[in-house]
Image 1 (spheres, rainbow, N blue to C red):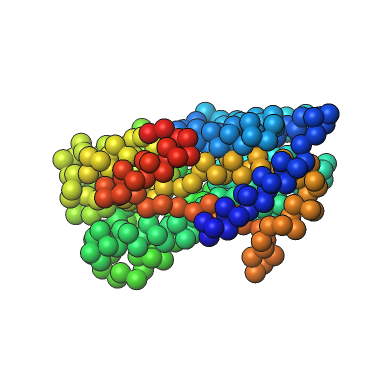
Image 2: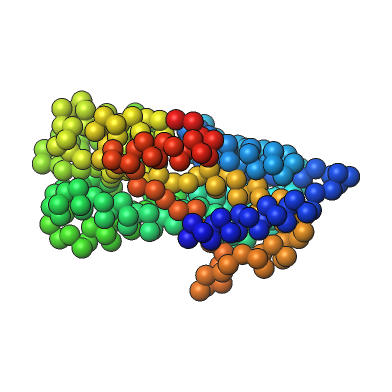
Length: 327
C-alpha cells in the first residue's frame, strides 16, 4: 500500500509540474479539520508544504472543539467564495451531505480526509483505513494482555465514521480472544479532555480489576494515562491508543502507554492539496481516471499506519523528522 501511495503522489506531482501557468489565476483550496489539537497541526503542515510546492492558496480551518454547525458554516463560506476545491473531515458525516452535494453541483470538487462521508457524493477519501487500524490496535492489545483481561474503550464520538470503524475493528480483533472482556458502555467524552479523564478515573474505580484502556481519539490515550498515573497503576493497567503527538511519545517513553497507532495525517493534508490542485488544472475526470478504484468502484487512498512502542520510538521520531514534523 505504501508503494501505491508514493506512486500516486509521484504521478500527481508530475502532472502539476507540467500544468503550472504563470498567467493563470491562482488556485484556492480549503482543508477542513475537526478540532484544535496537535494532530491537526500535522495535517496543516502537509497542506502548507504541498501548497508551497504547487503554488496554491490553501486555507485551513478547525473549530475549537468538534462543532458540526461551525464546519457547515465554513463550508458554506468557501462555497460562496467559489474556491477550486474542498477537503473535509466531518464530525458528523450525515450532517454534511447536503452542503457537500451543493458544492459538487456548483462544480467544486470535494474529497474527504481523516473521516469519510461516502453518502455525500465526495469524489474520494484520503486517510486511514480505520477498520483495519482498529483491528491492528486490537491485535496489539491481545498480545499485551496475553489473551486475558478487561478492557475499557474511550472515544470522543459515536457518530464519526472513523471512531465507529476503529471500535468495530478493535472489537472484531478481540473477539478472537474469548478471555478478554470489553467493559460496556463505551466511554464517550465528546472531545472534552477533562471529561475524558473523569470517565477514565470512574471506570478504574468501578472496575478494580481493569486490565487496559483503548483510546480511539488522539486525546483519549493521554487522558487514560493521567487516570492510570493518579491511581498508581502504571504497568498494571495497559494503554493502547491512537496518534503520536509529543504527549503520546513522552508517555510511551515513560512506559505509561504501551502502544499507539500512528496515523500518517501529514499525507492527508499533502495529498488533499495535490489532488485538488490537479483537478483544477487538468480536470476532475482526467484525475479520477488515474486513481485506483476498489471493488465497489470507490476511490480510497489509504495513507497507512505505524504501530509505535518503546522499542521503535527513536526510529519513528526520525520518520516524523523526515516529514518535517519536528518531535
